[in-house]
Amino acid sequence: MTADAMTGLGGLFLLVSLLLMRMPAALGLLAVGLALMLLSGAPVGGIPAVILATLDRQDVLAIPLFLFFSHVMVKGAAADTLLRFSQALVGHWPGGLLVAAVAASVLLGFVTTSGVAATAALAALAMPGLLAAGYPRWLVLGLMAGSGTLTLLLPPSMPLMMLGLVMDQPVGDLLIAGVYPGLLLSVLLLIMACVLGARFGRRHKKMPAPRRREALIGGVPLLLLLGVLVSFAFFADLAAAQLAAIAATLAVLVICGVYRRLPLRQLADTAFESAVGAASLLAIAAGAKALLLGLSVTGFPGALVDLATGLPGVAVFIVLLSLLVIVLAFLLDGLGLLLVVLPVLLPAALVLGLDPVWLAVYFVLLLQAALVLPPSGLNLLIIQGLARSQPAEITEGAAVFLVPLALVALVWCLWPGLPFGEPVILTLVPTAW
Image (tube, rainbow, N blue to C red; front, side, top):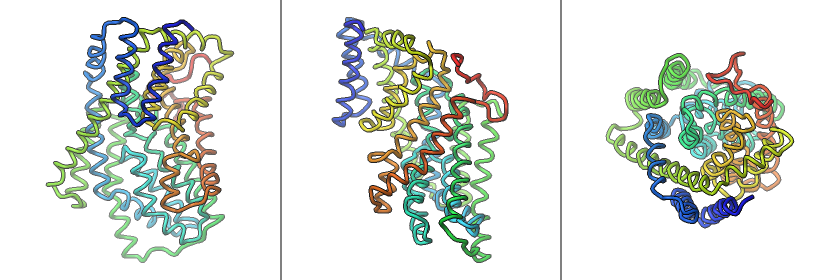
């Protein structure tokens, strides 16, 4: 590795140090990118040009609109509505309460952009009843923590949208590609909930007819909203920003007009919160592009390409990537991990023949694992705090989710992008295999 490339490596170590000291991610990324440009003697005027090129895309509009959609749904008590609907539908099955909780989490994954918020909201509603019904704490812990990560993969997935901006990939292609593994993981979790719920739980009585009817009817508008959005996503030729605009409009109509849970006067506050959140995310994306430009002038990506081509095969690269993500997950938060590791490794991945859309989805699968890995997985810590669990239960709970997640990752590697026998928009099969 040349001296310039070592400078780039030193910049990455500096960035990790700054993030560990709780420096805002956008500032840390921008500062390290600028420092690398200055040390390499490159003109720093390239940074504004790269940032403007990144933000001057129609896909950028999808981020604030989907955030607004998510905030409206969360404030409109979508988690409570979906949980009651699922309980009314399957709660009387053997282990039905557990199945209902996972089903509600899957549906909630389509209406929120925050895995942490989805996990906390649904777990606070479902866990007391599940534990009171006698389900093992480790089982509840694992399924609640794991199913809460589905929002990272199911549209509107904020990690995939951010990666689309930083990696210069169409956001719509990334969102559609995440549906296949997201649904596969959802099915596996529901099967696991059925089997283990029936094994450890017990049959519950049906809700009283009036309550059951009210819960079933109450969930219909949300399900219709999801059906409309899925139909537009798959069968209409719409850009991500157009789909986000439709989602935001429908959310206001359903939550404010049908359920009447969010007063119209609060919409302005919700829109402001969404704008602030989107500005923060876009600032991080801009900082990530500045970092990538700084690394490129040091020749660090080229050095990684040379190292990658010297590996025995692409499978070794994927294994090393997986281990790197797992290790860094103990140091960095999810967004920092996304925008530092994958874009830096992208040139090496392209040389090995890996499709960037395929790789982005695989990286999100790794991020899901990081969120439930003990002892510091964020989703697991949230559930642990709510349930006041012991360390042994944390490990058992993580295993409940990591087993189906590993299976989905394996399927994504061996048979990617083929949910119905045809590729999803792009040919996602890595050409090196």
